Amino acid sequence: MMGASALRGRSMPTTAPSSSPAPAASQATIDVLTALLEARTGQQIAAYRSWRLDTALKPLLRERQLGSLDELVAQLLAGKDREIGEHIVDALLNQETSFYRDAQVFEHLVAAIADAETAGHRIRIWCAGCSTGQEPLSLAMLFAERHETTGAPVPDIVATDVSGAAIARARSGRFTQFEIQRGLPIRRMMRWFDGVGADWVAKPELVKLVTFRRVNLVSDAAPAGRFDLVLCRNVLLYLTAETKLRVFSTIARALRPGGLFVMGAGETVSGQTPLFEPSQRYRGFYETPSSSTGDPRLRAPGS
Amino acid sequence: MKTCLVVDDSKVIRKVARHILETLDFTVREACDGQEALQCCLESVPDVILLDWNMPVMSGMDFLRALRDSDITQRPKVVFCTTENGMAYIRAAIEAGADEYVMKPFDRETLASKLQIVGMA
Ligand SMILES: C[S@@+](CC[C@H](N)C(=O)[O-])C[C@H]1O[C@@H](n2cnc3c(N)ncnc32)[C@H](O)[C@@H]1O
Ligand SMILES: [Mg+2]
Image 1 (spheres, chains in turn brown, purple):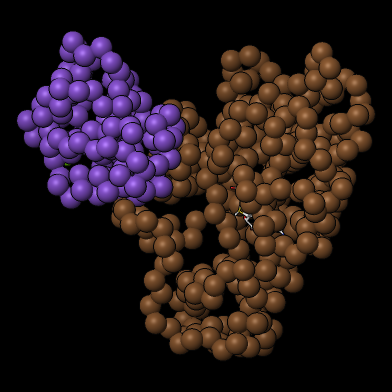
Image 2 (cartoon, chains in turn orange, purple):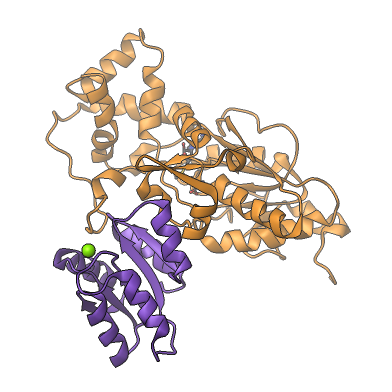
């Protein structure tokens, strides 16, 4: 998301956004900001470079008519404005996403869900770290279209994120022209979105298929009930090994026996937790060790 | 390498599109209107055509129809790329046989994404 407007209409390869000279923040300020983000979300910003702080917080500075990050941190520490910390965290989170990101995953998960459906219960999917909603809405479109052609029920889709701003945007179903053109086939856009001004807004019947909630994976409980599939893609990259373990165990406990877990294209659990192992049946997905030998109904047909 | 024919009356757009497409490993040819594009296709059919709507001599829509009515049997992917961003235009283009639709302004990510959707990247 970040930098999207700066790139719009230009063809330059994505590089670090050039930041206009603002007074350089003191080390103490940088430390406060990175500590705030890590305390609230587990995300370590040391992995980024410091230009990211400036660029990411520039709109907030402008909005609050502040001249520097030092002034912003002074306001934060004064503690009079309860919302300022939240705005800072929202701005610092990497919320990069797109429709049908790593498109193959979506093909594979349709097959996996179809297999799980033979057990007869209502399928439930949890998108953990759903950002502005492209991921759960991608799922919703797939399953709504499947429903139209085969009558198969649409799974329950629960989508959560730590960012209140991201969840609010996701609920609105509203996307810029730039966002709507990333990963979304035009026919799906025509079917499921309406043009509103310069933006594109998901039809209410689509948004209605997803339950959006604010959940912090590091400190909150998982949404109630068990899930057949949990997607937590491109969320845990900058967490410490210890924090990741905590999130893995939350997710493992939220899975139904035989349930599947999927991470981003560049992520793996291997060597990090004994709670998951690669699924033998569905490439790129993980499952809990007991479940791969557990319920025989959930084994691959013919195995 | 895959080939892309960029059809647009704006030299700037052609240049920008060429630059992006070359970074995506396409061999690029250019045409500045529908008629020239048709001529290009008669010489050799590209894998994909990036097609503007409003152009002098022959518009994108007229080109698309002419291409379908021509003796050319290969079916290149056609991605409209235009400032006509309303749903009515999009629908008309898709009904006329376009495979995808890019609303200008576009950037590298948009083009890459749309080309991937039509199986070209
Ligand atoms: C890079 S986006 C990925 C979105 C989507 N899953 C995808 O792959 O396209 C990461 C998201 O994780 C969220 N996130 C980061 N830390 C989180 C935490 N502790 N709990 C819940 N969500 C978190 C961020 O707010 C952001 O929206
Ligand atoms: Mg033109």
